[in-house]
Image (tube, rainbow, N blue to C red; front, side):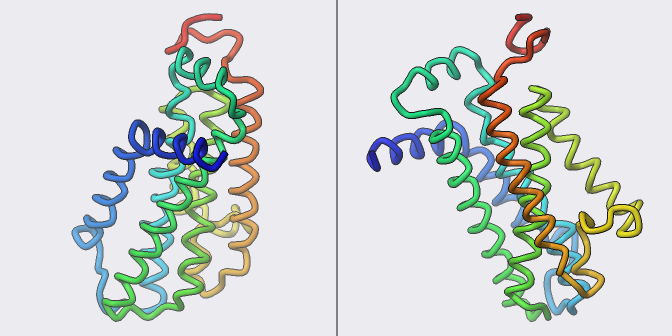
Length: 219
């Protein structure tokens, strides 16, 4: 069984994840071009973590349903011995692993640049925000079957956080670390996990909209 699951992970890595891993790598490498990454205080470090690094969740969690965008491929995968739930969980585990690898690596880079923040709090804030934004996009894709809409949802929510702030978004405010507290990050993380679980359930229960004139053709 482990060998079969390993093969699924390898196929997903080769044929689905590699372009997104490259994009995530370039995203991290480009950070110094857009903002300071050296000698930052706690608030400045939090700003980088919450307003920049959290986008890795969108980049690396959104590809989970990528192989299923073609109905023929989806039907072939579904006909295999392994359940689609197991396949989806393997993809999510892979994406989460590389998300943590890239994010924690970037945080160590900030630490090496003499940035003043708690590593534990930085990891917690990054994981919560990235999971929520990625999960929101994944849920939007599962429901809409529309890639553009799926990417738009977390971006719109991100912009709403900049405009509305904690006053209107309450415990689902993305940038609370910048205000000196991360207590509500647990709620964001739980909401992100819920979105991912919902996305998998909905995607596998209702994989094709009844009336849709998009890439799969009208049912």
